[in-house]
Length: 366
Image 1: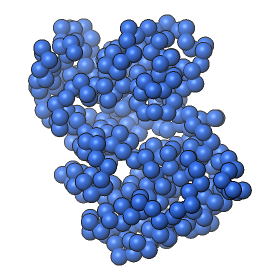
Image 2 (image 1 turned 90 degrees about the horizontal axis):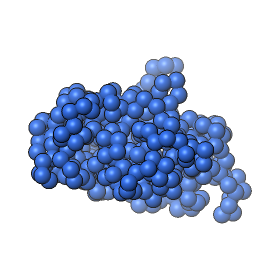
Image 3 (image 1 turned 45 degrees about the vertical axis):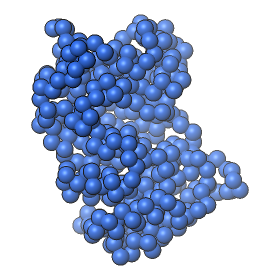
Image 4 (image 1 turned 120 degrees about the vertical axis):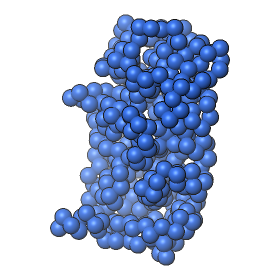
């Protein structure tokens, strides 16, 4: 790797000289680098997933000399929409923070749909090269605000949007989702990197053990672990099989580096009925969550969702999952399945969770 300077906004925080990583401002480092000091791995983790078909088309359209992750991120100074970190060659005295930020995106259609009409555009800086994840997606500006637009099958889009609305009803901090034609879009909850999103891998490594993660989050405050318990409850309720170190995280103050909160909950498209119509209600997700709340010994208060409320939420989702697996009415199945899972969690956690008919905020608003 070439000699590089790592910056946060306008401030130099670390550098690589002759392959040696040297810290200049330790408290300003990304959490991953505070834990590992491995700059190259951190850089590559910011790259678009090369397994995505449209990622390969994008790299070809941008005339990148190589398709590897490091080449991709360095071509845009490793800048992203959701934080203020970036790099430049150590001998570069011209490039500044305002030069590396993204103000438009001419390759959104190519990244999202593989649009042939975008393929022959002249190369330009695009946030797509640091838009991670395995689904075809893009960053798109709406009235000056960045939104992530994501493709998916009807059952994936249905699950994502419904789970967002369930989480919102429960009073949990949720990333905002809306339908966008044949796609779904999610608002940039960092508000243009007014705070920094740091993925959980920086704190927990690659562990998936709930209790290990809970303990790793403890030093950042009770408000962080409380939100983590809420996220795990939601995952258990909606059968989110794909929670991992790259799809949740924390928000940090972009100036001081202070960890402010758990990031709003996002990425629920491999959950609920996204893969099939699940028949088993008591499963490992519910069991693991019950074990976690017993370990945490926290008075957790969770809102109970009534059948009628779920029916209203499900009817309001514009996509309908396909009829299959002998299920003639998919939306009715979803309602009953969620009610059964809620009841199962209540049974296993009756001594550790206080279930309420409404959240305190809802009661105050009556």
